Image (cartoon, rainbow, N blue to C red; front, side, top):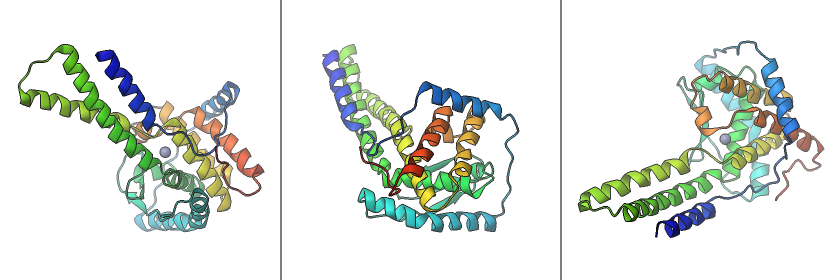
Length: 267
Ligand SMILES: [Zn+2]
């Protein structure tokens, strides 16, 4: 009984995962090792930038406007019709940015304070736009729903396996708690492939908007250094920040430079 339910659970979970829509840059161990060395080589302190409210809003508005034509081109390519992504400033200390189910992009003061250049901030916003354009939020919500169902199935399996004899109320509570845990697993983060896909789309958008990709990519080194320093950040609950991301950015830059139509290739 238990084996059958666990197998069914695995099938349901696998069905919920969706692969990347676009060809992703392939990394070798040597690429990652090289990126790791470049991250470790920089031991200087990460500077803190103070911008007042007007400067912050001006910066976010300028980036959002500059990226808009490029995001529309990628939306059209992906056949996505709703391509308006409001950028929201969260005035809190957390180092965080995310895309939500209202098609918004949130960026926190804590993260903005660690990004010196407009290019770095633009990279973060373009990355979150990439999640929207590739419909990662919708994919993940499906996974959360499937995770909740799978959690309920698992709870059923546990109850069946332990031959639980509780009151009706007790049984309900166990199922409720496990469903919540299942939903949390689905919601923890986007998949690694989704993150890499968002970075790839960001590279195309930044290039189309005439941003310097090298300067923009510095954000991934800053994040890798914050991660290595274990600076408290909710960003790392939702985004990978290791040398792999730095290495993948190098590959993405090369791909974008070589691309004749500046559009990502479908799988
Ligand atoms: Zn992301």
